[in-house]
Image (cartoon, rainbow, N blue to C red; front, top):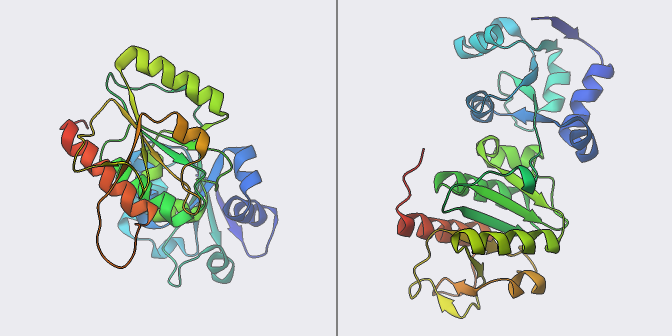
Length: 272
């Protein structure tokens, strides 16, 4: 492993900083910045290519950190602590940061089981919500997540961190147009009888009255605007979660998690 020492904001530092802060840079290079030991462990678990390991003191690495450095064929970058801390969002920086190669997935490349479980998120706008729903999707065996319209960058460090690295085990597809989605749904309905179910606090069907199970595509609306009219029109029906209390709706990540669990429970899915 080649070791590089950084004591100034040189070109290598600027590349790493751009991967953290610049959506366009991440997209062009198919490379992302990862902070947090649990997220890094999920990178390793997913078998992704680590391009850089960044530390501020190699000699103070834990046994796990030393083992990772020894097992990965990438750049090892040791930088002055003030530069390292500038890259970290956490008040107490973890022992290392990494950059990782990713491979965006298209709808044509997507492989699904016989009874697919798909989550469709309409124009997600909050990094924390999206990371949280990725954790739930991973927990409840969602096969793929479709993202519609103008959205956050789902490889933003905030999403990676809030997903606890589950994003690296997720099949995420950015749907380019409603026509592309409509054609895919028509194909799936013919192949396996896929149901498309929207979610809204004003939905006409309560989850207590309708058993949701795969094959199914569950549609979550934008945090502020809900499901678009175009998406609602392709839903077979729209469900709501009965609640009581002073507020009249749930956070989208909370509502989505409840519904994903309900599908998981009803489908009795037990896949690794």
